[in-house]
Length: 280
Image 1 (cartoon, helix red, strand yellow):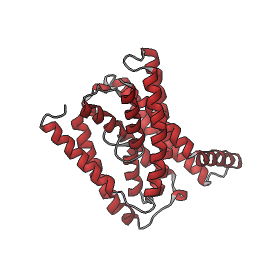
Image 2 (tube, one colour):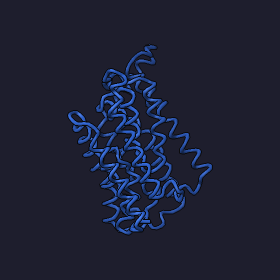
Image 3 (cartoon, one colour):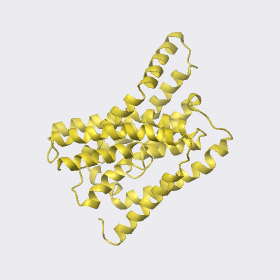
Image 4 (cartoon, one colour):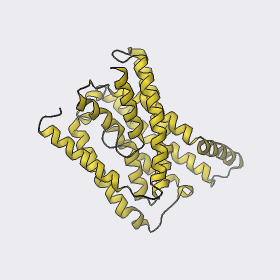
């Protein structure tokens, strides 16, 4: 991998990790379009740590507030505290994807080459998730007859959004897309669903990235040098932060329809390219 390729993949990771369009799908498709060698799931997971650094930095005040508030709630046995509920929601919501990831590690050791990571699977997942996001946009808040803000996130929201997050093991599903979709179905407003999606992703992506980084260190970096990883991480941090700030501002006045359309077109074009043999 060339250094400039690592920089571009870091940009792709940063821009797509928190937008509901699937970072793993784009990290798979972009090299295929340009004829680059697939960097693999380990490289993808490691540069995701750049996205985690960005989201932790952006939400540092929220994280500190939730952590300290939870400690105070435990000490005073005030388990109805919203900070405590948010902490529990994040903790319980993280368990499904960790369990699925562990099962895959144990029973599907060659998952990197699994058909679920094929371009065809990515295209189908993108179209399916586009449809679900459209349904959530249309029916989610209407069905609940209310728009709940961030301070009204419940523990059950965390659990159900966590189950949706576990679907992101399949490239093309999108971790942020699946959790945003679930949040809208649950009646959260777009900003609340997006904020909680970001916070919910911190433990899962951090653990996944650290595990894969340790794996790379043990096995050796192979074709991926430390320099390439560093450059990928750097560009991932910068563009992840920009994507987070932009998306939260965007959803204050806009719907998710632009992402519904993008994912539908992305999946359709990908299937077309595969059908004509332009991509394999």
